[in-house]
Length: 338
Image (cartoon, rainbow, N blue to C red; front, side, top):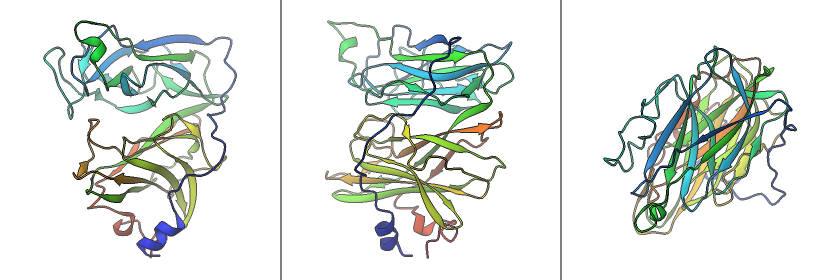
C-alpha cells in the first residue's frame, strides 16, 4: 500500500475509551523500599540534566517490582532510571546532558560508562507503577546492572536561584524484594531523529526487526514527546499483519499504560514499529533534541520474558524525517507496505 493508504489504515487518532494504569500485583510482604533521589542539588540553568548513581548489591540480586515517583512536572521535565554496568562518573552528582546545557558546577559525563539500559521513565506527574505478579527487574548479583543511575531533566530552576536558593531531591522510591522472580522485566525503546518543517504535520517513524531468539511479552507502554506531539503509537508486525501495542497522546500523563492487545507476544522475526504525529504551528523548523525547544519521539515498551534472558539490543532508532519513513525502510515489504 502507498504512503497515503498507510496513513489511512493506521491513523494515529486518539482512541475514545477508559485509560487504565498497569495492573500490578499486590505489594509483597517482604518489599523493601529503596530511595533513589537527587542529593539536595540546586541546578542553576534550565534544561540541565543531572545524574546520581547508587551501587546495587554485588553479593546477590535484587528484584525491582515497582516505582513510586517523587517529583513535580513544573520542575522536572522528565526522569529516567538507567541500569549500568559502570556509571558515567564516580561523582555523587554529574552533568549528564551532553546535548543540552552544561555548567561548571558539576563535572560532565555520560549516563553510563558501559552497559546502558533503561529501567524506568517518568514525566507529566505520572503516578506510581507496580509490575505484574512474578515480574521484576533483576539488578545486582550476577546481572549486568551493577549501578542504577537517576537522570533528572530540569525544566524550571527558579526555585534554586536567589532569593529562594532551594535544594531539590526529585527522584523515585524503588519497591524491591530479594525473592527471585520467575519472569524478568525489560524496556525496549523506539525513537527517531529528524525535524519538523514550519507550519506542517509530520510523521516520525521507526521500525526494527527482533533478531534475538527470545519471546517478549509486552504488558505496558509509554509515550514521550514535547509540545508538538499529537499522538504516538507502537505496533508489532508479523507476516505483514499489524497489531497495536499502544497509542496515547503525550499531552496526557506520561506514565506506563496497559497495552492495547493483552497477551501480545513479540518473537524473533517480528517487527516493532512506532510513529509520532507531530504538528508544528510555528514559523521555525523543530529539531529532535534534548531541550524544551526541541522535540522527542519516543515509544517505550515494558515487557517480561520467562526466565532471565531479556533483549540484548534495547532500542530501535532511525534518522527520522526527511531521511527515513516506513515507505523507504528496508523492512517495507515485511511490513506489507507496497
